[in-house]
Length: 309
Picture (cartoon, one colour):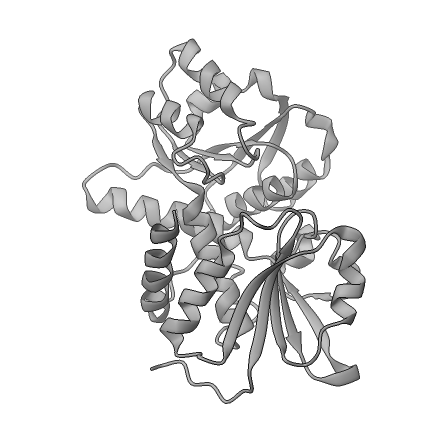
């Protein structure tokens, strides 16, 4: 196997609250099997914001890495060093890699959500090109929601490199004014609008990302159907339960291409695995590029994810 290792038994986990729904253990465990890492394990642990510091203090040197979900992606910041472009710029990290031992052990923080979103669009675009469909130039984008995942979605638009205008639609559009500044730093114009006003922007969008959890975007799906407008772009809905979501069904009915959240989940997890196991460099996921040596790993993780879903 191409993944050699010479380490004692190693532990990793996904932390969050709630956490029972997480599919990260399915993905990471499949990756360890594919890599021949028989002495690695991965679990889910419910940890809230107030529990994070004592939990980190309880870990010994056998711990290699952590995945972070709500509500810990910002809470982790004081405990580690942002170690890739997007963790530094956004102040949002979904990955911890432990480096060193004992009192010298450091926590390196990474954001692989940005990479996961950008790769999901890249791979979906490649599939459309292979089937003879036109690959749209991603010039305009709409992001539904304005939380941590929306921030990563905006960065993914920058990573894709050909998005110039972004509309962020949320119930409270003024709650994250930093999004406009982030877009400006990357040469994009960002406009913040109420969620109820986003249908014309969705109709014009080349790229759309829904980051509103659970059934929060169902109202947008119904409004899209009621408006009887067509869409032409590609939607990524980060929600993967239900599958497909109401918004994905409405998007397809109105003529667009919809990608499920399991695609983002897969690619961000591939990056996490490679960082935690030491098979990637800190900057490897600052840009969107397919590492051909990762295809076997992606295939194994995708198969496990599809079975779990």
